[in-house]
Amino acid sequence: MADFTHILSSIQPGPLLDASIPFREYTPLDLSVDNKALEGIDLSDPPACQEYIDSVLVKNKARVAYGGYLERRNLYSGNEAFSEGEERRDVHLGVDFWTEAGTAVLVPIDGEVQSFRNNAVKGDYGPTIILRHTIKGVVFHSLYGHLSLESLDGLFEGKRFKKGEVLATLGTPEENVNYAPHLHFQLILDIQGMQGDYPGVCLVSEKGFYRANCPDPNHLFSL
Image (cartoon, rainbow, N blue to C red):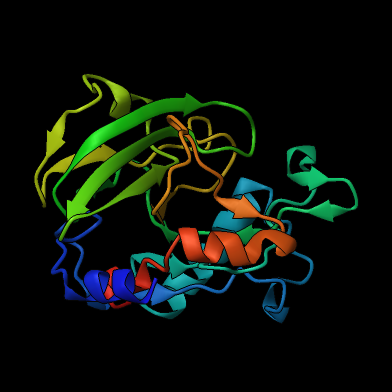
């Protein structure tokens, strides 16, 4: 893991979102259970979630809010798909980038399509693309969730994308299965044979495994 973290830190990625949005217009966002400002806000309701995100963007004069790696969230409360016995899946395994629907999603490093799918169950990713990358002999994957339906048009397994090319656009709440518009970006070492999908939220008891298998994207982007 330390070696892979070093590899990530040595890469010079391109932008992940519309290149016309400068990084100075990005701001951190805390959606964790520890954020007292979220008390009384139903994050599972897209308009309520969007209202809070907009308040953070306005306060910080920003266009993109980002964060969430290994963050425990109440965002998934009320959705039985995130319940497993007495334990809930609420540990977020990627970084979310919250901004307007329709925003272009760019390929940060060269890769090829491993798989894609519309995971159209409420609370899932909606339209999803997974790319495969090989750097210094190491194969890993990047997952892009909550995209627009049109993002899947013309895709095929093995299709190659160069750094900086447009991969997709962000979906609306109707397309991304009931979330305020955002990109879920996740790195995955062992895709475990999965196609078009991979867990983006885990149980606290699974955190050790997924932390090792899904490295912090901040090592790539130096957020």
